[in-house]
Length: 543
Ligand code: GLN
Image 1 (spheres, rainbow, N blue to C red):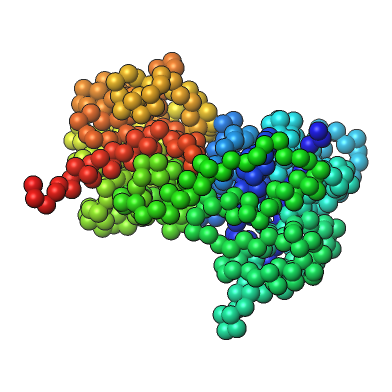
Image 2 (cartoon, helix red, strand yellow):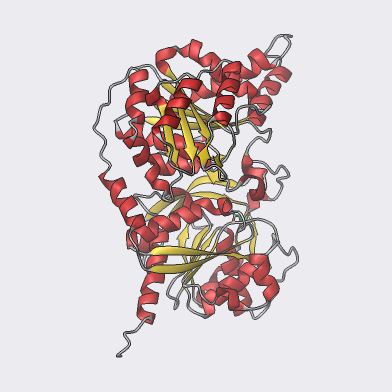
């Protein structure tokens, strides 16, 4: 079969769940036996989000091949259970960089370089590259932002052209909009949806389906009105009321026969009958009241939960499988630092210190590691969280508060975390870290090895600094085990403490590989340790 394309545009406002919608529709199609991939087109001019502040952009999601991508790629991977690659995230910055470098190389033979056709052709080339590199039969393409943004015009023009390039049977356009609710009259309004469809049409794209997001139930009359005004079939108006349960979205879209409609228009017949039993179990479990565990997440971007979205999801996946409910306490590392006291951590049954860069709030994170170590609280350190667990341990064993990572103190007498040798002369900030999948050999008899129950794993990385091997034996003498190492034994991938219920730090980011149906082994081990400890602490009253 020829490759089929489903394009997702947004209308009215952003942040209404276009990415989740695309991811969920991808899942519906996978359930019907098709190989799918999803691509995000980001209209901003940065080359990738790797150098952007998490406040601006949320989490940077890292792929196997080391691409630093938009957090929507995390939704795609988790919902569809696929592994994507760098062609699946395109930015205006990448497109222009490529075209300009070709121009400098003389590839255009003196021609004038223009948005149409040169930029649009490069966008189309990148869209076509997805099927080639992933083997997907159906490629879902999401355009970031909303229709009307100046930056997204070349992307929308490329999408428009693709209908005639690939043909009507191979292209399908989904427009995701928002229905505002007017409290005074208690009504949902379709006018902004009508306007955004008009705007889209003025660019030359007529949507085949409208997903109308709203916080309130949408009645049949309203859906009919949207169909009429926006010139789509009634079956193709899909009201999507906000759900508390993220993983319910595919089930809700399934109820509305979304996949049937899309496949009919793309002239495809399903190969499999979807089996939603696992998803239904998952969603039912989310709804079931479960005993709660409190996990303190100590970071510096905690006001914006999206900055730690994969960590939050990985925690939730593990908790669901263990049968507990995780209550995340978002703790600002700078506030912890300023308070000079552990009181903010006293409620926590477990502590996570996630990844991060730069010195703001570092001492607060070290305080969290100290509290976890000295109070036997389960601790999971992710990348920076592992490095700071090492720093804290160094301060303890050397009885010297100046032990540090050279990222934060270049003249520390105990540089226990140091720049990796191949990072020494790097001046460019973008895409130059140790990125992507690298193997890690697990050491027998360790918590990590027990959790994974295998000998070697591959995990996704994003860092410049590493454990300084000069200190390995001293640390080992004092009870730190290096339970995961690179195959040549030179790079510490996992560190853990002896004589502690669970104090484990990873140089990699396990959160990127967790799936709702397949929680990550280390998150499972961490949440189990928290739950076990909590249960042993709660003694029956008559004891
Ligand atoms: N800043 C640290 C480093 O570059 C940790 C990075 C991270 O947590 N992803 O090594």
